[in-house]
Length: 322
Image 1 (spheres, one colour):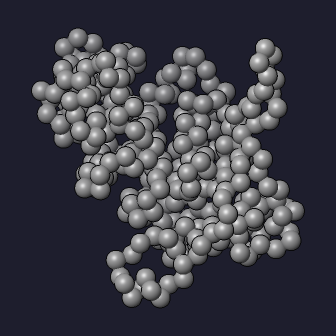
Image 2: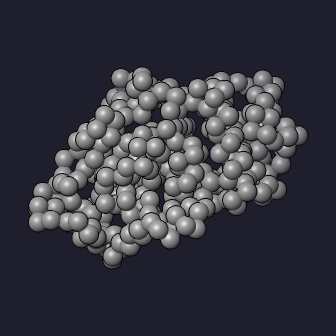
C-alpha cells in the first residue's frame, strides 16, 4: 500500500516549571516518547490505550498543532517538522482534525455558517454566495438540513454538533483526518450514526483516518490496523484481525480481555487479566520497558533494557522482550 504519512522517532515533551518570579524548568512530561509508525493512503489506523497515554498528543503533533520536541513527520515525503509559514498552511489544508468534545470545540458565539465557513475563508477557497453554497452542501453531506446555517451550537444536540465538527473538517477537502475520540462523548445510539457517516465519507472521498478511541469493539469495526499505546510509546501494531486474534504484548492482552463479548459461555471461559497498580507518571517513567511494573511476565532484563521496535511477523510490530 502507498504510504501517506511516515512518523519517525516522534517526541513531544511538556516542560515542568517551578518558581514565582523566575520560572525554571525542573523536568518534563514525556507525553510522546520515540514513536514510529506509518499510515497508508485510504486506510483507518486505530490508536488505543489508557487515558493519559499520549494518544491525543500524538494526533495533534502529527498535524503540527503541537510542535514536536524531536523526530520527524513526513507527509507524502515532505517533512512537516521542517515546514513553516505559507508552506505549512498549504499542507494543513490537506490535514484536519475532528475533536473529542462537540460541546467545547465549537465557538458558542458563532453561527454554524461561520463555523463551517471559516476554513473556506482561511484557505481562500470560496467567498460570498459560493461560500454559502459550499456550507449548505457540507451540511447536507453530514445529514443535516441546510436551513440550520444561521443557528448557534447551543440549539443542537451532541450528535448534531459532532456532525457540524465533521462538516468543518471536510470544508477544505482534506486527504487525512485525525479523529480524536469523536464518539466518546455521545450516546451509544448516536455513536453508530457518526461512525457510519465517517465510513461513508471515506468511501466517497478516499479519506485516510487516524482514529483515536477507547472503545476496542468500535475500533475493530472501523479500523484496518490498530496501534496500542502505553505511557507515551507504541507497544504493538498489527492488522486488525491479527491483533485481536493473536495479541503478543501483555498490555494488549490485558486490554482485549476487558472487551465485553455477547456470548455468556465464552465470557465465563476466557481469562480475565487484571492489571495491578496505576500507570506510572509520564514525568518520571520507569527504566527499561515502561510496562514492566504492572506486567505479570516481566523478567530482570525488562527493568534494565528498553525493548526494541521489531517486526515479529509480516506487518506485526512489537516492543517487548518476550
